[in-house]
View 1 (cartoon, rainbow, N blue to C red):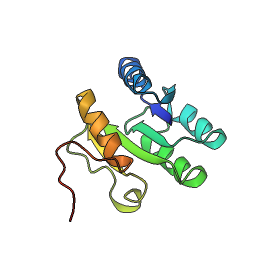
View 2 (tube, rainbow, N blue to C red; view 1 turned 30 degrees about the horizontal axis):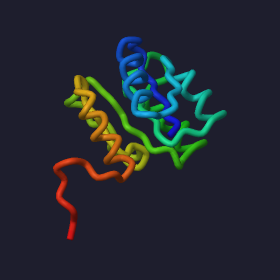
View 3 (cartoon, rainbow, N blue to C red; view 1 turned 180 degrees about the vertical axis):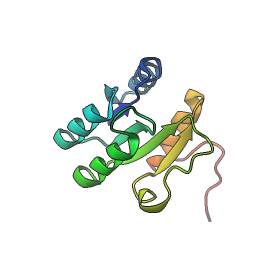
View 4 (cartoon, rainbow, N blue to C red; view 1 turned 90 degrees about the vertical axis):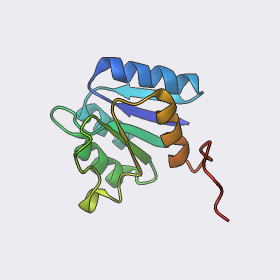
Length: 127
């Protein structure tokens, strides 16, 4: 699966890219909102993992570009601002999942599995 990873912190971007790559995904890792917007206008991604707080063009801007150019892309927003209301108002339809930093890689995987409709260990089936 093609995954876009967007985070302005190189350490986080590298760890996420390496981990998701180890799961067999094809990764495109970028550090700015501008780069991400250029990528989504030119390429298709099944999933985008987007930091909400990017300098300049923000995660909100990236999500709006995804909605305009690649509405089929599923979005996981990552943010270090737990108290912030990410995904309310008109953004609610653009964000499928939110993962609050800091998070364990197993949490990221569980969020991605849930995003993709895969069973999450410990979830009971709905009868």
